[in-house]
Length: 532
Image (cartoon, rainbow, N blue to C red):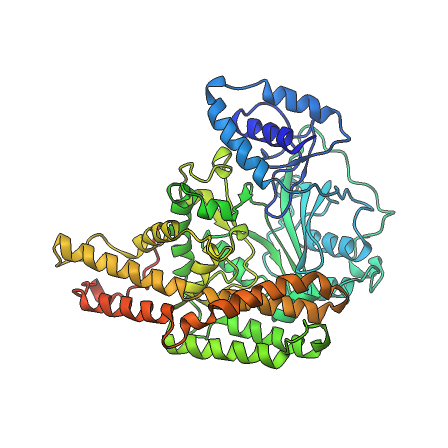
């Protein structure tokens, strides 16, 4: 099936809901398979199994349904579906589809989360480099609870992490179990176990995401960090519900929707749709109170990566040394300390692909109206105390020269709204407007100043990958060199006389010159948690 035919099928399914039955909804990392004769959440972008002729019949049914008046919208959906579709991945139906270590670890995590039957279907979302991530179709735990009377409400259980740690060795390429399966759990995990019972007409399925932390992830994150930020975000309604977590992995709800792309952020009409919906959501994330006044966790991550880079110096590109990279990290830290940038509860890796938009056609067309409930964040692995501007710029970062300043400024205007309580009291209309413009100018200058730091972090990460996996260094080198070049080209803008520094200091001075906003009860500018 061609990409266009696939996009047309999916877009039509989104616009014209029918009784078509889907097994796996769209993932936030990859695209699942679509089959008939099983109920499941509606899909947005999915890959059809080309070996299954019934799918062609399904597509004909979908295309033949609905309202012809919506054809213009369908055409727009097709355009964006085609541009964002991803390559097919092989379905990993258990048992036997996964390699031994990952299969055993996945089964253990699911059992700990309360899913005591074998998954009916598994899709690989990512594998090995950052983490192993799988979408699992399982029997609904709430349904099982109703049948057995057993409660599966488990959120965090660090004591059980040794089980999974024993399964996945510190070698990222491990393909054998470190312990036998019958030693891992009282319930047999071997391939000789009885197969899962067929799903009866009264049985329900659930879709969950299982993440197993890779050795690379563990080098950057302490055990206490793993999954903690995901749970915090979920508690505030800003990310998927965390059903279970420990030091080695986690199980979360599956978010039905699609990940954003740079097109969604920089499209000419994006500021009217998804960006407008995303802004108050990010304001809410940045308003979650920090447990303590700590330095931005970004520096901790980079220091941990630098240690590994020094160990694998031989894998670095010619002409680049660990000392040179370390010196640039230290230089940037001094500059941003001097600039006294605001620190908030940040995402830490707020690229568009870590933002999801729910619902049907709205997720495919950037300018379709949306609200804050339609968007959510995923992958909080690097979350914690972060520079506010780092998150903001990371969302908009793109190929140099392609950034949409119009969209950025519109987004920042919406981002600031939750922190304001109407017109500043005691000011007339013109004075209030001047103050709001000054605040917008300041946060825009602050955001733009973070361009070099986002490139530096990316370069350090790819140097880190090269040093950690020298056998694959040739794969990461082009990315590392590109990010390093972008960093060097932009690094001077935050020096004392740099353009970003000059613009930021001027914007701060202009805001201070405006009439001070009156705040009740001594409330500081970024203390209130905005309503979303």
